[in-house]
Amino acid sequence: MLNMTKLHFIEGDTDSAYWAISGKIVPKIYQGGKWINQKEYEDNLRQGFKYVIKDQQFYDTNAKYFFPTIEGDKYDEKKLLGLAFENEGDEMYALASKNYYIHTFKRNQLTDVIKLKGVNLKQNNINKQDVIDNLVNGKITQGTNMRLGQINDQLQEGDVSKQYHMSKLLNTKNALTGIQNKMVVLKNSQSCLPFIYGLTADSYIDSL
Image (cartoon, rainbow, N blue to C red; front, side):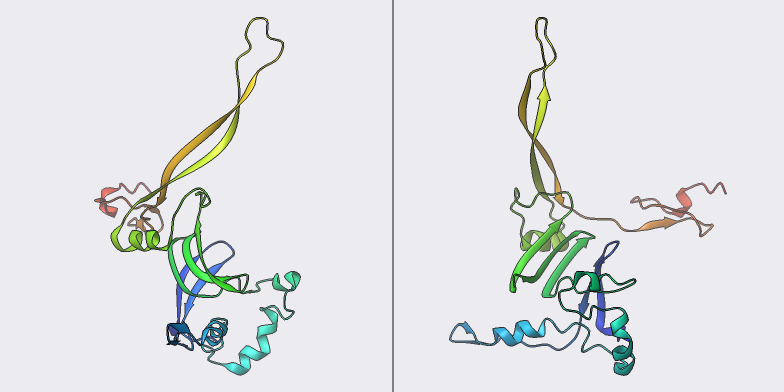
């Protein structure tokens, strides 16, 4: 139904997937330093699968079973095996599932959006260039998560109740780093082990 040579998988999760679609291209046109075709450019980003459909008749007949037919209806979006567009934009870089940068619409305006699992982005200044530097140069960016914790003191002699105080807890971690998605397949072609640099399938003993 779709021309898969014009679709490129970027990243996916349990219930979502992001694809780059080679459809109709509308270049940005500037005149006197002003962007004069902004509406045409942004409208084109909402093309969906329009320009990569191979069998239009089949698509028109069956799309209603998978795609929402009522605009803005959340129940209609959640059809069994159904699909719904969550984000549409013109640029995306993904490091792994739930770790990506995308230039997409928020409140009908193109905006930079960064998602990093386990990192509080409100407390860390991580931007698009940091994601690109990690992909191109392997640059590691650290992040710090801060939270408040309630700690109780040990009861001392004569105390009637425990004393509590608030403490600020800081946790520093690697926010942007490389990811290894390879597996070592053993000789029996059925068992897999995590990839470790310098080790091959011959390094393991097959006891099956």
